[in-house]
Image (cartoon, rainbow, N blue to C red; front, side, top):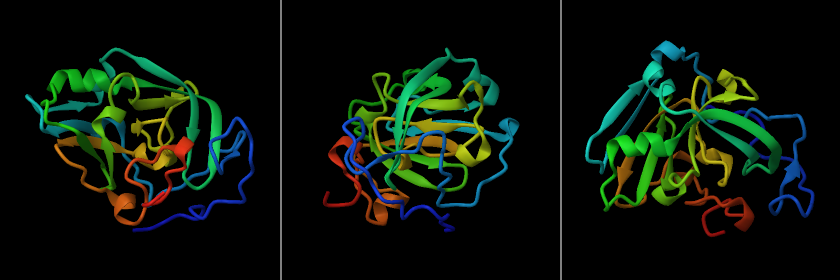
Length: 201
């Protein structure tokens, strides 16, 4: 896979308003990707949830956008060290999608996968209860391709590699199945406030 420059981060600064080891990126939003940015049109985008669910289901762009709109305003944090404060994303709460498929009680984890083949793993508890979104907009505008547009997973309370760009679906499992960065030494969960950057942190 192609890894863009920037994954090595930059010098960290200490600030009481930041998670440990982070710096305030201000107006910058570094573009970091493990893959070449795809040119994926909204008309070609789809999202599916399967695995340990009562009724696997797929949504095209129009069907996803027809679900009740939801927004996130707050902060995001990248494992490379930058944080952005007061960002605004628009989309649909992941709860709306999960309500449709009805996860089995045995489901504990999910593998999120992108249209590019990228994967990341998350505890299901981090994706429910208003904690995650499928985001279509940033700052009131369509989400740019380099930041995951036309749609990305948004899990803002975890390091941003968990918020898979160009999201294509979730597979629900009864166990953790490491994704791309988890297989390459990153932490299974990635809580910024506990500085869970790498396996063993």
